[in-house]
Length: 152
Image (cartoon, rainbow, N blue to C red; front, side, top):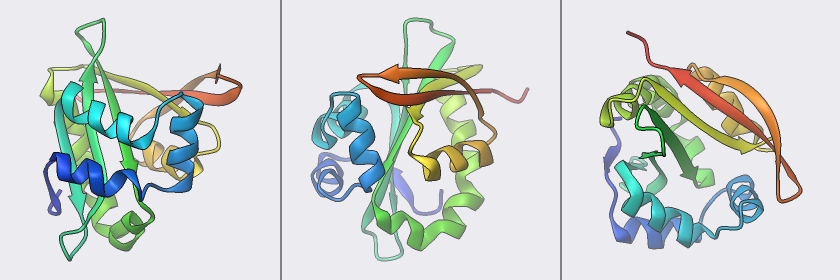
């Protein structure tokens, strides 16, 4: 993305107190804090990027981790409400960024899950070509799986 760069520890500090309410609730359901999740994102991801607004302020972080199966990548994104201030650019460049996640680990399949109430996130995932699949319960909260097969 035009407003993206490699993530830093400073981005974790900045964003951990500014995440969207839905992202905070999703993390709480998964028994994680924003600080823990974003730190894990930097440490565990093959690629971890920060999206910035026009003033250079971090508004989201995203990346992809490798799971048990080396052909499956687990994408993630956590953002602040200010991500909406660059919505047009974000949407326009999201599909290319998702392809970059496939390429980061040579993953033909990207797979993860999101809280069912996180409708903004689920709508964005569909926009990016992900398919929603299996519903599941995570610590009493409904979640839905999502996947995307790389275009070859």
